[in-house]
Length: 332
Image (cartoon, rainbow, N blue to C red):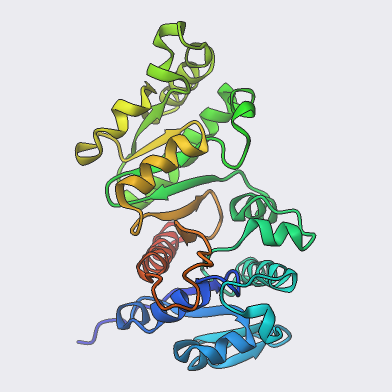
């Protein structure tokens, strides 16, 4: 009796900044036998960069005007001059190109040609300098799919979701509302429970030192965060808070929660990156298709030196494939 062969998920991969480490870490990841057994890569990038890396050059090349094949492929979105893809030397054309790769990968997912997205690092500065308003992948994905999303840093020791992302610290308190936090807890619990196969347990950080000390150090915990936790619990979410962030993250080796909802960017990301930088994956929660990314930047100083680790990119790609399989099960 022969076992039924599982169809590998098709993952759309944007190469990121052509002058950063994205192309080389994607190429080294795709050379891994473990990765080839986990997914079908659809890489969106530059024709010249493809030829510079054997693992990319081995992929059949197609143009953006052609349908994607059933198997692996490299989609040549741009044909940059050599100076616009030189390692460590970003240009305006490179800024426009990295956004174009991302757009093309998103379009493939929207057209059901890919079951997951994995994005190599981009430079917000270079994309913005090229005249494209850009605050981050997460914000663009929310708009592209018309859904509310959460940024989740998924690591082996702790998972941290962010209630607010790329906003100035002075604006955070105004953005925190009971309805917003309640929706986020429902969203995080729903998707994480799907992956875990059981109800997820969530911890919720306070905003102020010592979670406000009962209102002595700030009122947000009393007026917003605790009521949101109580409302989410009434709706079936297993959550506790507001909790002092410093004491909560100190329990990383015996974390009592499956994920933590942090109130602002650095509150969550400092902990996630300090605990396990290379194996933490940025996951966008709430999309109809999973999206992942390594938790690092373009690293211009390392680009072209061969010193950049491909482990974060490989981990992000494997997470994208695993989430795509979980989404399949959800859809039946």
